[in-house]
Image 1: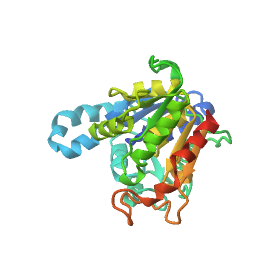
Image 2 (image 1 turned 135 degrees about the horizontal axis):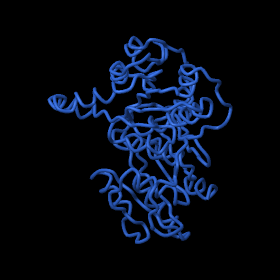
Image 3 (image 1 turned 45 degrees about the horizontal axis):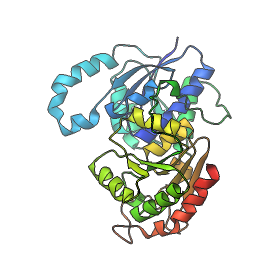
Image 4 (image 1 turned 120 degrees about the vertical axis):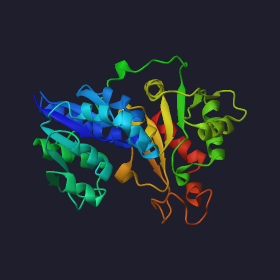
Length: 334
């Protein structure tokens, strides 16, 4: 049996992008088993894949904010990651922090070479490096890394995330559900709240029930503003990642911004319209069945900026993506 350790700590979208590589490796190498090192916030996701044997949580973000916690939590983590000798350790993230975590385990380390790794110094930690050119979708680059490190041919098939939806919760929120994933990290990625309200009004008029999830207090406040006076638009209670995945399975369709949840929707296969302003769907867009990408049509996009260089609060590029245009795309996939 071939034992492999995957180091992919975060974020949500990056973790999801790694799943198809596991599926392909399992199809090519029947006896392979994976362990996975990941941040606690995303530890559920590897457990949804049948090829993952063990999940090792590594709260690096927490340790950087409170280094003294390493005194209590560091030794148990080190014992856990060194418990098994591995045939291969794959750093699928390409950062200094992930490369350092990889050095703590026992076994040969593999990763991207200096010309294509995300942080140059990370490549110095690997026993073997591979040149996998940039300019490709992140999901495809990870698939190539796994195939080269584990020595099997790439499949021409569409990516299979391998998520077993039977183990996700089945929440009873009725039928004709539309999910609006309105939250994201960059200010420049936010679609105007007034546009969300217009889209909700259009959907409700067609008999749909609009659900508004949220992850923190700012997203909760935004959801309440989007809800406004629409009784058929429901601000959900705070849900776990597993519960949100259960809703994604049940939803008729989703409208999302470029965020980890749009990638989760693609992995599950629910029809989704994802909106792209400052980011490039060719490199990091949601990949999967029934995924529709709407891009702004301005010369400055994709700018890959967290702050707009023209307007500080509301990037003007979003004016190109009107609620009517989004509704037409949504209606086409329903």
